[in-house]
Amino acid sequence: MSPKVKSASNGYCRVCSARISSFMSFGRMPIANGFLRPDGTENEYFFELAPAFCEACGMFQLLEQPDPQKMFHEQYAFYSSTSRYMQAHFEAFADAAINTVLAGRDNPFVVELGSNDGIMLRHFKERGVRHLGIEPSANVADVARTQGISTISAFFDRRLANEIATDQGSADAILAANVMCHIADLPGVAAGVQRLLKADGVFVFEDPYLGDMITKTSYDQIYDEHVFIFSATSVQRAFARFGLELVDVMPQITHGGSMRYTLAPRGSREVSKKVNEQLAKETTLGLDLAETYVQFKANCENSRAALMQTLERLRSQQKRVVGYGATSKSTTVINYCGITPAHLEFISDTTPIKQGRLSPGAHIPVKAYDEFTKSYPDYALLFAWNHAAEIREKETGFVGAGGRWIVYVPEVAIVS
Ligand code: DWN
Ligand code: ZN
Image 1: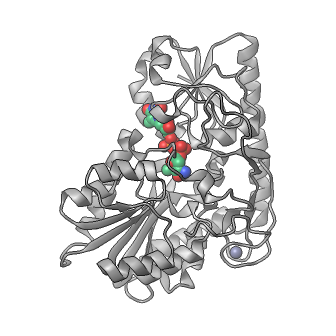
Image 2 (image 1 turned 135 degrees about the horizontal axis):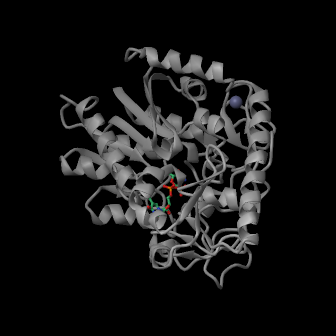
């Protein structure tokens, strides 16, 4: 992605240039991972978080996205390796690539876009596979480099693809996880992939899935970094222009429901029947219909009302309530719903860079995990709901002490 890319769509689809308009607004939003120092709350940046759906190509997208440099930089607050489950997930992702696409190839070359702290590439490195990570956020890229994972800090585009192909050769596999949906210049990246990929190579990426977001009302997937929420339909159409064909899809449970897409140069591989099945499911779900998004808006409003009713009730009962996981997603929930420090005492998070800071927009203190265990609150609002299995497994002490979880996906509820 080029940092020069215009971040506003100016009312045109970023993929097919058809006219688009937002179907709802989540209001004024700060940078989702823009955790603030307590003495640095002045001049906080805000933009309007407004999603749109392109009826021409099916792409769900933000009308406006802040400049990439405001989101991805040397202080980027999200380190992929914070979850044990995600570590296992990426090991399996790497294994699948090694055992299928790369099997039998002579000195294969793997490129990962948005390689973060090396959570996936380390498995290629350990097995001696030639690899290159491209990660614009310098701090997380440094973590990967210190582990000997070959990484460059840059935004991926056709120019960089050309440089890599010239210097290191074409790629057998290009991988990306939770990255493609962050890049506004999707056509630029697709052109780069087309340039860098071998004629018999594959491009495999996964991202939060539109179908899950719509069915679960998990509107918190919508924030500055997620300029797109993909479906099989929109992915198939977006890449076709670049000679890349959708040959496989594989649903994932990660991040509250994701989809892994495999693309290959047109005609180079057989198209799995799962592709057509998924496209048909999306039609049944109504993902291509404007009315689906009108209903989604109503569902978001109902979810907000239910969550605030719960938090207000607990406040009036003087219960201690804290947030669990200062996720990017929580920035949308907190600011859209109007959650304040009067509702949440603090948010517990295991990421050192977020601790001692204030949450974006609402300025709720983020504290180390110890603060949570030291004196369990009455209720914990589970912002990291996508890691619920891992968290609830380890937090038996909290529940044993009478603590209760407040969840809001797929519905607002209090659970043990
Ligand atoms: O696409 C993106 C996804 C992959 O990751 C990025 N745009 C940014 C990020 O989104 P997120 O911040 O919503 O991701 P998570 O993985 O839901 O964040 C979990 C947060 O909760 C981290 O800050 C770590 C924290 N955590 C914790 O405090 N205790 C996580 C676990 C599992 C825990 O036990
Ligand atoms: Zn479009």
